[in-house]
Image 1 (cartoon, rainbow over the protein chains, first blue to last red):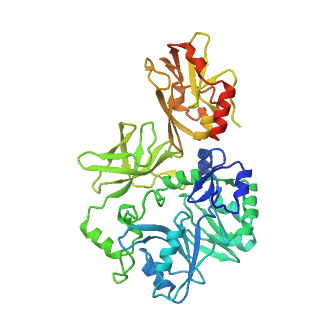
Image 2: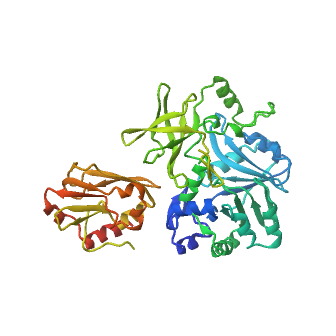
Amino acid sequence: MGQRTPLYDQHLALGAKMVDFGGWDMPLHYGSQVEEHHQVRRDCGVFDVSHMTVVDVSGPAAKAYLQHLLANDIDRLQELGKALYSGMLNSEGGVIDDLIVYLTVEGYRVVVNAATRDKDLAWMQAQTAGFDVQLVERSELAMLAIQGPHARAKTAELVSSSRAALITDLKPFQGFADGDWFIARTGYTGEDGLEIVLPRDEASHFFNELVGAGIAPIGLGARDTLRLEAGMNLYGQDMDESVSPLAANMAWTIAWEPAARRFVGRQALEAQRSAGAQPKLVGLVLEERGVLRAHQVVRVEGIGEGEITSGSFSPTLGKSIALARVPANTGERAEVEIRGKWYPVRVVRPNFVRHGKALI
Amino acid sequence: MSNIPSELRYAASHEWARLEADGSVTVGISDHAQEALGDVVFVELPEVGKQLAAGQEAGVVESVKAASDIYSPLSGVVTAVNDALADAPESVNGDPYGSWFYKLQPSDVSELDKLLDAGAYQAVADADA
Protein backbone atom coordinates (compact mmCIF):
# COMPACT_ATOMS: atom_id res chain seq x y z
CA MET A 1 0.00 0.00 0.00
CA GLY A 2 1.24 3.43 -0.91
CA GLN A 3 0.87 6.73 0.89
CA ARG A 4 -2.56 8.30 0.78
CA THR A 5 -3.66 11.90 0.50
CA PRO A 6 -6.55 13.14 2.68
CA LEU A 7 -8.81 12.69 -0.38
CA TYR A 8 -8.12 8.98 -0.93
CA ASP A 9 -11.59 7.78 0.15
CA GLN A 10 -13.26 10.44 -1.97
CA HIS A 11 -11.32 9.33 -5.05
CA LEU A 12 -12.58 5.79 -4.51
CA ALA A 13 -16.16 7.01 -3.95
CA LEU A 14 -15.93 8.94 -7.24
CA GLY A 15 -14.97 5.74 -9.05
CA ALA A 16 -11.30 6.52 -9.58
CA LYS A 17 -8.94 3.95 -11.02
CA MET A 18 -6.01 4.25 -8.60
CA VAL A 19 -2.34 3.84 -9.52
CA ASP A 20 0.98 4.11 -7.78
CA PHE A 21 2.74 7.40 -8.46
CA GLY A 22 6.05 7.93 -6.69
CA GLY A 23 4.92 5.82 -3.73
CA TRP A 24 1.47 7.44 -3.53
CA ASP A 25 -1.90 5.87 -4.36
CA MET A 26 -3.30 8.43 -6.77
CA PRO A 27 -6.28 8.62 -9.15
CA LEU A 28 -5.36 7.86 -12.79
CA HIS A 29 -8.83 8.77 -14.04
CA TYR A 30 -12.44 8.66 -12.90
CA GLY A 31 -13.81 7.05 -16.07
CA SER A 32 -12.35 8.69 -19.17
CA GLN A 33 -8.98 10.36 -19.28
CA VAL A 34 -9.81 12.04 -22.61
CA GLU A 35 -13.07 13.49 -21.27
CA GLU A 36 -11.24 14.84 -18.24
CA HIS A 37 -8.64 16.41 -20.51
CA HIS A 38 -11.34 18.23 -22.54
CA GLN A 39 -13.08 19.26 -19.34
CA VAL A 40 -9.99 21.20 -18.25
CA ARG A 41 -9.36 22.78 -21.67
CA ARG A 42 -13.01 23.83 -22.11
CA ASP A 43 -14.28 24.51 -18.58
CA CYS A 44 -12.36 23.49 -15.46
CA GLY A 45 -11.49 20.58 -13.23
CA VAL A 46 -9.83 19.86 -9.89
CA PHE A 47 -6.71 17.78 -9.29
CA ASP A 48 -5.58 16.37 -5.96
CA VAL A 49 -1.88 17.25 -5.87
CA SER A 50 -1.46 16.76 -2.13
CA HIS A 51 1.36 14.32 -2.83
CA MET A 52 3.60 17.22 -3.79
CA THR A 53 6.11 18.44 -1.24
CA VAL A 54 5.88 21.93 0.26
CA VAL A 55 8.96 23.31 2.00
CA ASP A 56 9.13 26.74 3.64
CA VAL A 57 12.53 28.42 3.70
CA SER A 58 13.18 31.18 6.20
CA GLY A 59 15.98 32.85 8.14
CA PRO A 60 18.34 35.78 7.53
CA ALA A 61 20.24 33.92 4.80
CA ALA A 62 17.21 32.43 3.02
CA LYS A 63 17.77 34.49 -0.10
CA ALA A 64 21.51 33.84 -0.28
CA TYR A 65 20.85 30.13 0.27
CA LEU A 66 18.34 29.89 -2.60
CA GLN A 67 20.67 31.89 -4.85
CA HIS A 68 23.26 29.19 -4.17
CA LEU A 69 20.80 26.27 -4.47
CA LEU A 70 18.91 27.17 -7.65
CA ALA A 71 19.92 27.76 -11.28
CA ASN A 72 17.33 30.48 -11.64
CA ASP A 73 17.90 33.62 -9.57
CA ILE A 74 15.34 34.36 -6.89
CA ASP A 75 16.54 37.95 -6.99
CA ARG A 76 14.09 38.08 -9.91
CA LEU A 77 11.35 37.88 -7.28
CA GLN A 78 11.13 41.60 -6.54
CA GLU A 79 7.52 41.70 -5.39
CA LEU A 80 5.84 39.77 -2.61
CA GLY A 81 3.81 36.87 -4.03
CA LYS A 82 5.78 36.43 -7.24
CA ALA A 83 6.64 32.87 -8.31
CA LEU A 84 9.71 31.52 -10.10
CA TYR A 85 10.29 28.20 -11.87
CA SER A 86 13.78 26.75 -11.49
CA GLY A 87 15.90 23.67 -11.76
CA MET A 88 17.83 22.47 -8.72
CA LEU A 89 21.09 21.08 -10.09
CA ASN A 90 23.88 18.87 -8.84
CA SER A 91 27.50 19.94 -9.23
CA GLU A 92 27.72 18.12 -12.58
CA GLY A 93 24.88 20.29 -13.88
CA GLY A 94 22.29 17.48 -13.84
CA VAL A 95 18.74 18.23 -12.76
CA ILE A 96 17.94 16.95 -9.24
CA ASP A 97 14.42 18.35 -9.56
CA ASP A 98 12.39 21.18 -11.00
CA LEU A 99 10.36 23.33 -8.64
CA ILE A 100 8.45 26.52 -8.01
CA VAL A 101 9.44 29.15 -5.42
CA TYR A 102 7.09 31.84 -4.12
CA LEU A 103 8.24 34.95 -2.27
CA THR A 104 6.22 35.04 0.96
CA VAL A 105 5.98 37.33 3.99
CA GLU A 106 8.01 34.88 6.09
CA GLY A 107 10.56 33.95 3.42
CA TYR A 108 10.07 31.56 0.55
CA ARG A 109 7.73 28.67 -0.18
CA VAL A 110 9.21 25.94 -2.38
CA VAL A 111 7.10 23.23 -4.02
CA VAL A 112 8.98 20.18 -5.27
CA ASN A 113 7.87 16.90 -6.83
CA ALA A 114 6.45 13.98 -4.85
CA ALA A 115 8.57 11.16 -6.25
CA THR A 116 11.78 13.08 -5.50
CA ARG A 117 10.85 14.19 -1.98
CA ASP A 118 13.46 12.25 -0.03
CA LYS A 119 16.46 13.09 -2.18
CA ASP A 120 15.33 16.71 -2.56
CA LEU A 121 15.03 17.26 1.18
CA ALA A 122 18.37 15.56 1.82
CA TRP A 123 20.06 17.68 -0.83
CA MET A 124 18.43 20.91 0.29
CA GLN A 125 19.44 20.19 3.89
CA ALA A 126 23.02 19.38 2.89
CA GLN A 127 23.29 22.64 0.98
CA THR A 128 22.34 24.71 4.04
CA ALA A 129 25.90 24.38 5.37
CA GLY A 130 27.20 27.89 6.03
CA PHE A 131 23.79 29.55 5.64
CA ASP A 132 21.66 30.78 8.56
CA VAL A 133 18.45 29.27 7.23
CA GLN A 134 15.59 27.01 8.33
CA LEU A 135 13.80 24.47 6.14
CA VAL A 136 10.38 23.29 7.27
CA GLU A 137 8.49 20.63 5.36
CA ARG A 138 4.75 21.34 5.56
CA SER A 139 3.39 17.82 5.42
CA GLU A 140 0.33 18.91 7.41
CA LEU A 141 -0.85 20.73 4.26
CA ALA A 142 -2.80 19.41 1.29
CA MET A 143 -2.83 20.88 -2.20
CA LEU A 144 -5.51 21.16 -4.86
CA ALA A 145 -5.06 22.45 -8.41
CA ILE A 146 -8.17 23.92 -10.04
CA GLN A 147 -7.42 24.46 -13.71
CA GLY A 148 -9.27 25.62 -16.79
CA PRO A 149 -10.69 28.82 -18.31
CA HIS A 150 -13.48 29.00 -15.70
CA ALA A 151 -11.40 27.81 -12.73
CA ARG A 152 -10.93 31.15 -11.01
CA ALA A 153 -14.49 32.38 -11.47
CA LYS A 154 -16.06 29.12 -10.28
CA THR A 155 -13.71 28.74 -7.33
CA ALA A 156 -14.22 32.33 -6.21
CA GLU A 157 -17.93 31.60 -5.71
CA LEU A 158 -17.16 28.91 -3.13
CA VAL A 159 -14.80 30.74 -0.78
CA SER A 160 -14.89 33.64 1.68
CA SER A 161 -15.14 37.16 0.27
CA SER A 162 -11.52 37.94 1.07
CA ARG A 163 -10.33 34.80 -0.69
CA ALA A 164 -12.64 35.48 -3.61
CA ALA A 165 -11.16 38.97 -3.95
CA LEU A 166 -7.65 37.52 -3.84
CA ILE A 167 -8.51 34.96 -6.53
CA THR A 168 -9.96 37.68 -8.75
CA ASP A 169 -6.98 39.99 -8.29
CA LEU A 170 -4.15 37.46 -8.64
CA LYS A 171 -1.87 37.98 -11.60
CA PRO A 172 -0.41 34.98 -13.44
CA PHE A 173 2.45 33.35 -11.53
CA GLN A 174 1.52 35.02 -8.27
CA GLY A 175 0.50 33.50 -4.95
CA PHE A 176 -0.53 34.90 -1.56
CA ALA A 177 -1.57 33.59 1.84
CA ASP A 178 -5.04 34.23 3.21
CA GLY A 179 -5.26 32.89 6.74
CA ASP A 180 -3.89 29.35 6.61
CA TRP A 181 -4.60 28.98 2.89
CA PHE A 182 -2.06 29.83 0.22
CA ILE A 183 -3.64 30.61 -3.13
CA ALA A 184 -1.55 30.85 -6.30
CA ARG A 185 -2.35 31.43 -9.96
CA THR A 186 -0.05 28.71 -11.23
CA GLY A 187 -0.48 25.25 -12.68
CA TYR A 188 0.68 22.46 -14.94
CA THR A 189 -1.88 22.44 -17.73
CA GLY A 190 -1.30 25.45 -19.99
CA GLU A 191 -4.64 26.89 -18.83
CA ASP A 192 -5.49 29.63 -16.38
CA GLY A 193 -6.16 28.33 -12.90
CA LEU A 194 -5.19 28.04 -9.27
CA GLU A 195 -3.08 25.95 -6.96
CA ILE A 196 -4.34 26.10 -3.40
CA VAL A 197 -2.36 24.87 -0.40
CA LEU A 198 -4.56 24.36 2.65
CA PRO A 199 -4.68 22.41 5.93
CA ARG A 200 -5.17 18.68 5.37
CA ASP A 201 -8.32 18.60 7.50
CA GLU A 202 -10.00 21.24 5.32
CA ALA A 203 -9.09 19.63 2.00
CA SER A 204 -11.82 17.02 1.98
CA HIS A 205 -14.64 19.49 2.59
CA PHE A 206 -13.33 21.96 0.00
CA PHE A 207 -12.81 19.22 -2.59
CA ASN A 208 -16.45 18.13 -2.08
CA GLU A 209 -17.62 21.71 -2.55
CA LEU A 210 -15.65 22.05 -5.78
CA VAL A 211 -16.95 18.75 -7.16
CA GLY A 212 -20.47 19.64 -6.01
CA ALA A 213 -20.24 22.90 -7.96
CA GLY A 214 -19.59 20.95 -11.16
CA ILE A 215 -15.80 21.23 -11.13
CA ALA A 216 -14.99 17.68 -12.25
CA PRO A 217 -12.24 15.67 -10.56
CA ILE A 218 -9.32 15.07 -12.93
CA GLY A 219 -6.78 12.26 -12.65
CA LEU A 220 -3.07 11.99 -13.28
CA GLY A 221 -3.69 10.63 -16.79
CA ALA A 222 -5.20 13.89 -18.01
CA ARG A 223 -2.66 15.83 -15.98
CA ASP A 224 0.02 14.17 -18.10
CA THR A 225 -1.60 14.84 -21.50
CA LEU A 226 -2.41 18.43 -20.48
CA ARG A 227 1.15 19.18 -19.43
CA LEU A 228 2.52 17.46 -22.54
CA GLU A 229 0.35 19.62 -24.81
CA ALA A 230 1.58 22.65 -22.85
CA GLY A 231 5.18 21.53 -23.46
CA MET A 232 5.96 21.26 -19.75
CA ASN A 233 8.59 18.79 -18.62
CA LEU A 234 7.86 15.86 -16.34
CA TYR A 235 10.71 15.15 -13.94
CA GLY A 236 12.12 11.64 -14.29
CA GLN A 237 10.89 11.41 -17.84
CA ASP A 238 12.02 14.49 -19.78
CA MET A 239 14.98 15.22 -17.52
CA ASP A 240 16.78 13.78 -14.51
CA GLU A 241 20.16 13.94 -12.82
CA SER A 242 21.93 12.74 -15.95
CA VAL A 243 20.46 15.52 -18.11
CA SER A 244 21.59 19.11 -18.36
CA PRO A 245 18.90 21.82 -18.30
CA LEU A 246 20.47 22.96 -21.59
CA ALA A 247 19.30 19.64 -23.10
CA ALA A 248 15.86 19.81 -21.46
CA ASN A 249 14.41 23.05 -22.85
CA MET A 250 15.29 24.71 -19.54
CA ALA A 251 17.97 27.14 -20.72
CA TRP A 252 15.52 29.97 -20.02
CA THR A 253 15.51 28.99 -16.34
CA ILE A 254 19.27 29.47 -15.96
CA ALA A 255 20.15 32.95 -14.71
CA TRP A 256 23.73 33.49 -15.95
CA GLU A 257 23.77 37.07 -14.72
CA PRO A 258 25.11 38.23 -12.35
CA ALA A 259 28.22 36.27 -13.29
CA ALA A 260 29.39 36.40 -9.68
CA ARG A 261 26.50 34.20 -8.48
CA ARG A 262 28.12 30.78 -8.06
CA PHE A 263 25.03 28.55 -7.96
CA VAL A 264 25.43 24.78 -7.72
CA GLY A 265 26.11 23.36 -11.18
CA ARG A 266 27.17 26.65 -12.72
CA GLN A 267 30.71 25.57 -13.49
CA ALA A 268 29.53 22.42 -15.24
CA LEU A 269 26.94 24.35 -17.25
CA GLU A 270 29.52 26.91 -18.34
CA ALA A 271 31.78 24.13 -19.56
CA GLN A 272 28.87 22.54 -21.44
CA ARG A 273 27.93 25.86 -22.96
CA SER A 274 31.41 26.59 -24.25
CA ALA A 275 31.82 23.03 -25.52
CA GLY A 276 28.55 23.51 -27.44
CA ALA A 277 26.51 20.83 -29.20
CA GLN A 278 24.25 19.85 -26.32
CA PRO A 279 21.27 17.97 -27.67
CA LYS A 280 17.96 19.81 -27.51
CA LEU A 281 14.46 18.94 -26.35
CA VAL A 282 11.95 19.55 -29.14
CA GLY A 283 8.34 18.80 -29.91
CA LEU A 284 7.28 16.16 -32.44
CA VAL A 285 3.97 15.88 -34.27
CA LEU A 286 2.89 12.67 -35.98
CA GLU A 287 0.56 13.47 -38.89
CA GLU A 288 -0.27 9.82 -39.56
CA ARG A 289 -2.33 7.53 -37.35
CA GLY A 290 -0.37 6.05 -34.48
CA VAL A 291 0.92 7.05 -31.09
CA LEU A 292 4.38 8.30 -30.17
CA ARG A 293 5.65 6.85 -26.89
CA ALA A 294 8.59 7.46 -24.55
CA HIS A 295 11.84 5.71 -25.57
CA GLN A 296 10.98 5.35 -29.26
CA VAL A 297 14.00 6.13 -31.44
CA VAL A 298 14.08 9.35 -33.46
CA ARG A 299 16.18 9.43 -36.65
CA VAL A 300 17.29 12.69 -38.23
CA GLU A 301 18.59 12.07 -41.71
CA GLY A 302 22.23 12.96 -42.18
CA ILE A 303 22.53 14.16 -38.58
CA GLY A 304 21.98 11.39 -36.08
CA GLU A 305 19.57 9.89 -33.60
CA GLY A 306 17.56 10.92 -30.59
CA GLU A 307 14.87 9.57 -28.32
CA ILE A 308 11.32 10.41 -27.34
CA THR A 309 11.15 11.33 -23.65
CA SER A 310 7.34 11.76 -23.38
CA GLY A 311 4.76 10.83 -25.96
CA SER A 312 1.02 10.38 -26.09
CA PHE A 313 -2.11 11.11 -28.01
CA SER A 314 -3.11 14.78 -27.83
CA PRO A 315 -6.86 14.96 -27.22
CA THR A 316 -6.95 18.64 -28.20
CA LEU A 317 -5.12 18.17 -31.51
CA GLY A 318 -6.52 14.73 -32.30
CA LYS A 319 -3.09 13.39 -33.18
CA SER A 320 -0.01 12.15 -31.41
CA ILE A 321 2.64 14.49 -30.03
CA ALA A 322 5.87 14.00 -28.14
CA LEU A 323 8.84 15.62 -26.49
CA ALA A 324 12.12 14.27 -27.83
CA ARG A 325 15.80 14.86 -27.17
CA VAL A 326 17.53 15.17 -30.55
CA PRO A 327 20.86 16.43 -31.97
CA ALA A 328 21.31 20.21 -31.75
CA ASN A 329 21.20 20.81 -35.51
CA THR A 330 17.97 18.90 -36.13
CA GLY A 331 15.76 20.72 -38.62
CA GLU A 332 12.04 20.53 -39.27
CA ARG A 333 11.71 16.85 -40.15
CA ALA A 334 12.59 13.57 -38.48
CA GLU A 335 11.39 9.98 -38.36
CA VAL A 336 10.27 7.84 -35.44
CA GLU A 337 10.36 4.06 -35.22
CA ILE A 338 7.06 2.57 -34.07
CA ARG A 339 6.97 -1.24 -33.93
CA GLY A 340 9.67 -1.64 -36.56
CA LYS A 341 8.30 0.92 -39.02
CA TRP A 342 9.58 4.44 -39.59
CA TYR A 343 7.04 7.26 -39.54
CA PRO A 344 7.75 10.86 -40.62
CA VAL A 345 7.22 13.49 -37.91
CA ARG A 346 7.29 17.26 -37.84
CA VAL A 347 9.76 18.91 -35.45
CA VAL A 348 8.21 21.90 -33.66
CA ARG A 349 8.77 24.14 -30.66
CA PRO A 350 7.75 22.12 -27.62
CA ASN A 351 4.57 24.06 -26.96
CA PHE A 352 1.53 22.54 -28.61
CA VAL A 353 -1.54 24.03 -26.91
CA ARG A 354 -2.05 27.13 -24.74
CA HIS A 355 -5.34 28.45 -23.35
CA GLY A 356 -7.34 25.96 -25.37
CA LYS A 357 -5.73 26.95 -28.69
CA ALA A 358 -3.50 24.85 -30.93
CA LEU A 359 -0.10 26.47 -31.47
CA ILE A 360 1.18 24.07 -34.12
CA MET B 1 -18.11 -5.09 -13.35
CA SER B 2 -17.55 -5.79 -17.02
CA ASN B 3 -20.08 -7.15 -19.48
CA ILE B 4 -19.36 -10.68 -20.79
CA PRO B 5 -22.05 -11.86 -23.24
CA SER B 6 -22.70 -15.58 -22.93
CA GLU B 7 -23.11 -16.21 -26.68
CA LEU B 8 -19.47 -15.34 -27.43
CA ARG B 9 -16.18 -17.20 -27.01
CA TYR B 10 -13.09 -15.57 -25.51
CA ALA B 11 -9.33 -15.84 -25.61
CA ALA B 12 -7.38 -15.44 -22.37
CA SER B 13 -5.66 -12.52 -24.16
CA HIS B 14 -9.08 -10.72 -24.04
CA GLU B 15 -10.36 -11.04 -27.62
CA TRP B 16 -13.91 -12.22 -28.30
CA ALA B 17 -15.00 -14.41 -31.23
CA ARG B 18 -18.48 -14.91 -32.68
CA LEU B 19 -19.42 -17.61 -35.17
CA GLU B 20 -21.70 -16.12 -37.83
CA ALA B 21 -24.42 -17.90 -39.82
CA ASP B 22 -22.24 -17.86 -42.97
CA GLY B 23 -19.44 -19.74 -41.18
CA SER B 24 -17.18 -16.71 -40.75
CA VAL B 25 -15.92 -15.59 -37.34
CA THR B 26 -16.02 -11.99 -36.11
CA VAL B 27 -13.30 -10.81 -33.71
CA GLY B 28 -13.09 -7.89 -31.28
CA ILE B 29 -11.83 -7.10 -27.78
CA SER B 30 -13.77 -7.60 -24.56
CA ASP B 31 -15.38 -5.00 -22.35
CA HIS B 32 -12.86 -5.91 -19.68
CA ALA B 33 -10.01 -5.25 -22.16
CA GLN B 34 -11.29 -1.84 -23.25
CA GLU B 35 -11.78 -0.85 -19.63
CA ALA B 36 -8.24 -1.86 -18.72
CA LEU B 37 -6.81 -0.02 -21.74
CA GLY B 38 -8.68 3.22 -21.17
CA ASP B 39 -9.54 5.62 -23.99
CA VAL B 40 -8.75 3.95 -27.32
CA VAL B 41 -7.25 6.39 -29.82
CA PHE B 42 -5.98 4.19 -32.65
CA VAL B 43 -6.52 0.67 -33.92
CA GLU B 44 -4.17 -1.07 -36.35
CA LEU B 45 -5.99 -3.87 -38.18
CA PRO B 46 -4.68 -6.82 -40.21
CA GLU B 47 -4.84 -6.73 -44.01
CA VAL B 48 -7.69 -8.48 -45.80
CA GLY B 49 -6.37 -11.75 -47.22
CA LYS B 50 -3.80 -12.24 -44.49
CA GLN B 51 -3.48 -15.78 -43.15
CA LEU B 52 -3.45 -15.78 -39.36
CA ALA B 53 -2.64 -18.63 -37.01
CA ALA B 54 -4.45 -18.95 -33.69
CA GLY B 55 -2.55 -16.84 -31.14
CA GLN B 56 -0.73 -14.84 -33.81
CA GLU B 57 -0.50 -11.05 -33.58
CA ALA B 58 -3.34 -9.63 -35.60
CA GLY B 59 -3.14 -5.92 -34.83
CA VAL B 60 -2.56 -3.27 -32.20
CA VAL B 61 -4.83 -1.19 -29.99
CA GLU B 62 -3.36 2.10 -28.83
CA SER B 63 -5.02 3.80 -25.91
CA VAL B 64 -3.94 7.07 -24.38
CA LYS B 65 -2.11 4.97 -21.83
CA ALA B 66 -0.33 2.27 -23.86
CA ALA B 67 -0.12 0.10 -26.95
CA SER B 68 -1.41 -3.48 -26.74
CA ASP B 69 -1.15 -6.27 -29.28
CA ILE B 70 -4.26 -8.17 -30.23
CA TYR B 71 -3.98 -11.86 -31.03
CA SER B 72 -6.16 -13.86 -33.37
CA PRO B 73 -8.32 -16.26 -31.36
CA LEU B 74 -8.60 -18.61 -34.36
CA SER B 75 -6.62 -19.61 -37.46
CA GLY B 76 -7.96 -18.47 -40.80
CA VAL B 77 -7.91 -15.90 -43.59
CA VAL B 78 -8.97 -12.30 -42.90
CA THR B 79 -12.03 -11.54 -45.05
CA ALA B 80 -13.01 -8.08 -43.80
CA VAL B 81 -11.83 -5.36 -41.43
CA ASN B 82 -13.89 -2.70 -39.66
CA ASP B 83 -12.70 0.49 -41.36
CA ALA B 84 -15.08 2.56 -39.23
CA LEU B 85 -12.61 2.16 -36.35
CA ALA B 86 -10.15 4.42 -38.19
CA ASP B 87 -12.36 7.45 -37.68
CA ALA B 88 -14.05 6.39 -34.45
CA PRO B 89 -11.61 4.33 -32.40
CA GLU B 90 -13.41 5.47 -29.23
CA SER B 91 -16.38 3.26 -30.24
CA VAL B 92 -14.29 0.36 -28.89
CA ASN B 93 -14.80 1.88 -25.42
CA GLY B 94 -18.47 2.65 -25.88
CA ASP B 95 -19.54 -0.57 -27.60
CA PRO B 96 -16.82 -3.23 -27.41
CA TYR B 97 -19.05 -6.02 -28.75
CA GLY B 98 -20.45 -3.94 -31.61
CA SER B 99 -17.04 -2.51 -32.54
CA TRP B 100 -15.62 -5.58 -34.26
CA PHE B 101 -12.03 -5.56 -35.53
CA TYR B 102 -11.99 -8.12 -38.35
CA LYS B 103 -13.73 -11.18 -39.75
CA LEU B 104 -11.98 -14.33 -40.77
CA GLN B 105 -12.82 -17.51 -42.59
CA PRO B 106 -11.65 -20.10 -40.07
CA SER B 107 -9.44 -22.91 -41.28
CA ASP B 108 -10.63 -25.15 -38.43
CA VAL B 109 -13.86 -24.05 -36.79
CA SER B 110 -13.38 -26.57 -33.97
CA GLU B 111 -10.75 -24.17 -32.59
CA LEU B 112 -13.72 -22.23 -31.23
CA ASP B 113 -14.24 -25.01 -28.70
CA LYS B 114 -10.75 -24.44 -27.32
CA LEU B 115 -11.64 -20.85 -26.43
CA LEU B 116 -13.14 -19.84 -23.10
CA ASP B 117 -16.85 -19.60 -22.52
CA ALA B 118 -18.27 -16.61 -20.65
CA GLY B 119 -17.92 -18.26 -17.24
CA ALA B 120 -14.29 -19.23 -17.76
CA TYR B 121 -13.45 -15.81 -19.17
CA GLN B 122 -15.11 -14.14 -16.20
CA ALA B 123 -12.61 -15.98 -14.00
CA VAL B 124 -9.73 -14.69 -16.16
CA ALA B 125 -11.06 -11.12 -15.97
CA ASP B 126 -11.54 -11.37 -12.20
CA ALA B 127 -8.00 -12.63 -11.70
CA ASP B 128 -6.79 -9.67 -13.77
CA ALA B 129 -8.63 -7.03 -11.78
